[in-house]
Each structure stands twice: as structure tokens, then as C-alpha cells.
Image (cartoon, rainbow, N blue to C red; front, side, top):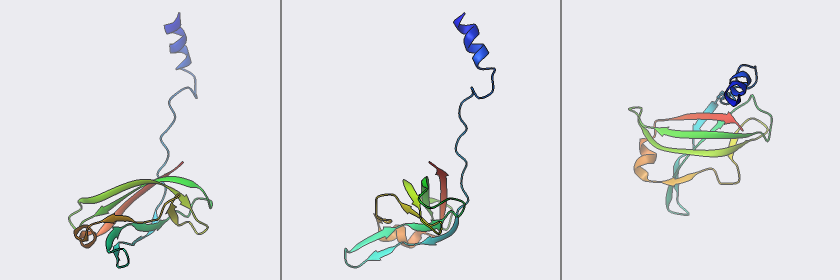
Length: 117
């Protein structure tokens, strides 16, 4: 009887697994990587915008630094927050991450993807 009930439940709309969140449209990606003379440290990161979201919307983002051959140099996943004009910033953290000179110099582009939380 339990198997029959489970089979019946699975036949009704709305009882399926939830859909994965849709990927959002990313624009205005800018390389913010460089060297911090004050701390004598290299850092990497990118700024970007998602204009389809209201301010203060939380998102989950993955940012990959890509070299000229299309290889992933370094990757980071974090929770972001939408500012008034759509720029995404790391939620509760500074925006850049320490790395090496070699990685900073090898960055050609970024692959950025985000989903609404």
C-alpha cells in the first residue's frame, strides 16, 4: 500500500523535485587583479553587474580566471549582494583574493556565473 501511495503522489504536478535556479545574465566584467604595494601582495578578482535584480538581492556566484588558452587559472565561489546599479560584491568580505604574480599576469578573461539565492 505504501508503494502505491508513493507512486500516486509522484503523478501529481508540483510533487517533482525543485528546478535548479536559473543562471543570471552577467555584464560589464572588469579585471580588478593587481599588486597591493601596501601589503606587498598580489590579488585577483573581477567586478561585474547583474541588472535584472533588485538592490540587496543575494546571489551565489562562481568566478573563474581564464588564461589565453582557455584554461582555468583560479576559481572562487561566494555569496554576493547586489548594489543599486546592479554591481555584485562579496557579501560580508572584501572583494579581492590573494594569489601569485604568475596568475595575475596570466589572466586573459573571466568566466562568471551566478544564481539567485
